[in-house]
Length: 303
Length: 253
Image 1 (tube, chains in turn blue, purple):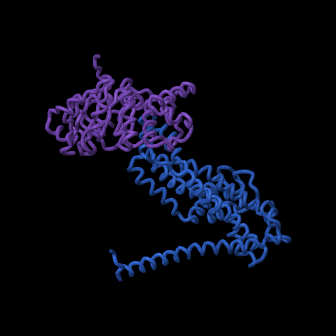
Image 2 (tube, each protein chain N blue to C red):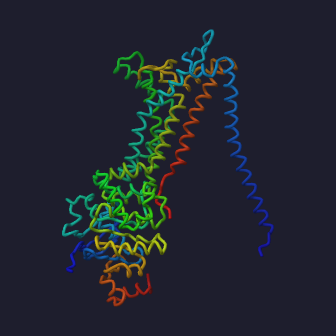
Image 3 (tube, rainbow over the protein chains, first blue to last red):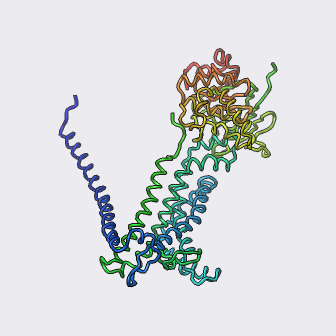
């Protein structure tokens, strides 16, 4: 029989202490996040005393400092969606195609070098990218397209695309690379070319990973603040052309928060904008999570 | 009936980087016969099998010397189109590896990538090959459901059907039963018996009884060399070399 010795008891106690410690640590970080969310709603919801939720979200005019003020964030929402959409049009093809190249076509050497470089792009501080957009891209656009300002929807989208490509590329590449060799070989053995194998077997098998990558890349773009503050132009209008300036939600919040009177209507309106932004990113992340769970990467068959 | 030569391997050497995996292999494979490759793990039998449909092309740092003639044409000739070669030499892998698609799409895949468009022909061919793989009755009611829902043995028969659907001349089987239970194994073996009417089959196996049951010719490999090859009957009853006898009787390996 195994008797419970003293050392056995102390081992049990150590295990217990370790478990509780880890539990407390994870609880602390989760609790913080929950508190921030609660705070966000508490500070944001009072704006509904001033405007109806419908007028707030679909109101076309954002003049928070006028008398009387207009708190319609529709132009800001459209601004956010527009920069995210246009940047996705640029970043998705570039990111995914680069991922396909790295995972399937590049030699081991190239892959070894290029992948870390792509991932390093993600560490560029956003203010640097914004600065680049302001100083280099904006004058260039202004001159080439003969437009009043180079700080506009297109410029912001370009810079945001630049920021989300590393995310999209790196996660997609992992997904594509982890498609089992067995599937690839099965396809080649049937007389499929490399390209047919990529398009008919490898991409469908890694679609969930790629979709997750795209959504995470887009959520990075929609939440990005510095770049849109610096290069989007800052006009709270509904853009009609690619070269119209826009004022996405994060830019509006960060630009106005310092001037908004504490707990005034403007202050609450900005927090309510943050709530809307939060709901957007939450939606993106839930979608990514859902897709990666529902369409789990299909591996070699299980017996 | 006169035996006709299908594949002739001539003085084949294969290297992974500096490691010589195959040494001076020369072997003839005849049409409508089952040839079994046996030998302990790492003896090069799978490597040789994968030379036959140039699956080894996927490996970087490999080098091949010698010739493999398929119907008198060297498959390593620079003019040979690997894609059409692989259509003529189908392959069944060790682990069942159906695509994450429907049963129908799995079988139709080879036809689709080879440019067949005719839907009626495709449906007919899917049915025919599933029947010859002895799978049709089990799956006919769920042909459009995912192949991943099948059992391991069914998946492997599906993979055989998939390989047959492009009508190859030769079927390579790399330990096709190693992941299957005895009943599924028996079904596959029965299938191999029927298939040799139509195809030339080369099977790699770890299971000596399996080689004895299904093959006409057995080739015994050891450390990258072809030790002995003969009619299966002869190999298993009167092998010429002591080494072969030791392996077959289980004294080593």
